[in-house]
Image (tube, rainbow, N blue to C red; front, side, top):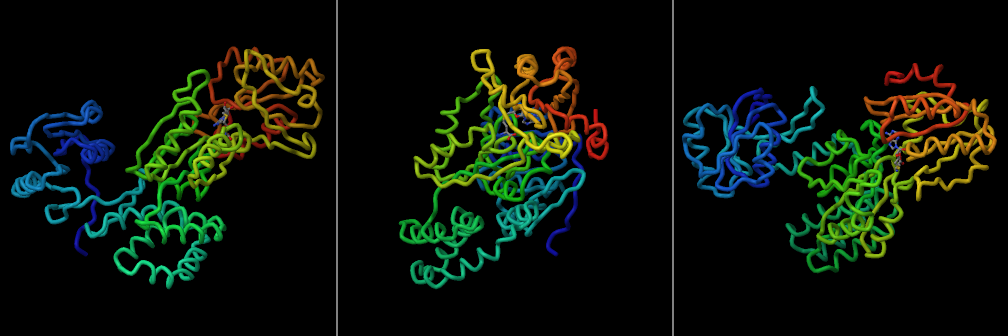
Length: 460
Ligand code: SAH
């Protein structure tokens, strides 16, 4: 064993980061997460880093005096002589020091971490290969997909061919690393080996033998990170860039690769941070820059998610993509609220509709929705709740029909409000539910009293 693995308590302690760029920012971020106070010293400091709470920024060249009262040091400059100076001064004073990507100058090394506080897993290769340790972490996080055996068989099938085409062993290694971790591998893992083979041949014929960007359109489920699919998680760990909107819960965004760039594209009712067309273009641009892009969407990308439009643009531009289904709000939220969407005694069918108002009116097939023995689930319906209830009654649904509003379903903030078509609008006026809220209408809502009890989340 080359290093002693320990977990260092830096809560409230002053730690020093030398270097104010992208890497310094990331390292300071980790220290802040661990509760440290961070002094950043650099002639130029990233403004975002400088204004973070808990950061004392010192715009200056590094000098020994900045080591005063410091518990731990990370040097992240791109000047080796500065890094060396920091390392020597620190070690002479017995202060633990890490120099990014320079094991020789380190008295301690930073592991790759899997954060499930208070449970924490740290991986290290003793500085030998940070990439390897990060990959190990990713594997543990996603659980290796079942069809990895297929991938191995695929690689074996093309081993000889690749050997004859890419004769330089170092280049060949890079080729395989690339192929086994990119679009080609994804194709194999999803069972489309024919396309994978075409892509591999193309890659062999290309000049640099390196494949380019791709987009994963990933359904992130309704909120609880536990409801992610293995594939979603695996791709989130692979992505260079994450594009997400406000339906994706923070803990889920946190599960993406630690050093991935994160781009928030908003989207609230009537407050579109980026227009849909701009999002489509952004995805294309990032992929064309050679990046692996995860487009994280709440619930399922193909259910009121405009996923279809996003992939249409990608397809038109010839950018490889895959769509990963997610648990849609109806399914996740109903389950966590103790409401089965179908039930022999109450509903033989279930319809999902959007209650999004266009010009203040809701354009729905009311007759169809008012049919008996059916559960109606309304997405984006909160704003039109009153219209919804009154139209359904007008079209023959009994005004005693039970209805539930579930706000922030599956999250620790889940809130359920129930009533009938007649009573709910005034109850909602009093209770003021906030988006995202899902509306469930039908006899199945009465089952909640019996069933919610069994669910991990408190029935409120
Ligand atoms: N593609 C998403 C739906 C996007 S439309 C999916 O498959 O779930 C956005 C609407 O989904 C919200 O207005 C709300 O009605 C519903 N929704 C999404 N997440 C929700 C949650 N956690 N709790 C309640 N409703 C939710």
